[in-house]
Length: 73
Image 1 (spheres, helix red, strand yellow):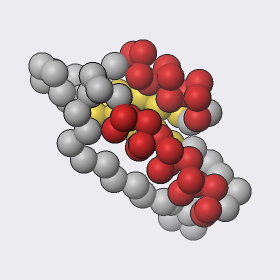
Image 2 (cartoon, rainbow, N blue to C red):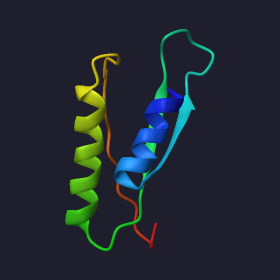
Image 3 (cartoon, rainbow, N blue to C red):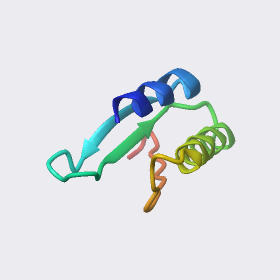
């Protein structure tokens, strides 16, 4: 997972980390986050991150979820 997380950080300039399932064999939860000036940019980058992970043949993307938080939250 470390090479994937490092590539996400480098390629998309997001904060990325393995955030869950560390104790399960061959399963991982990876999170990516960013601060963006507008919703369109946020959506564009997160969609690109998801496509990048889904296109990697050594991984099977089981699900993806996006959540947007505002300063008022």
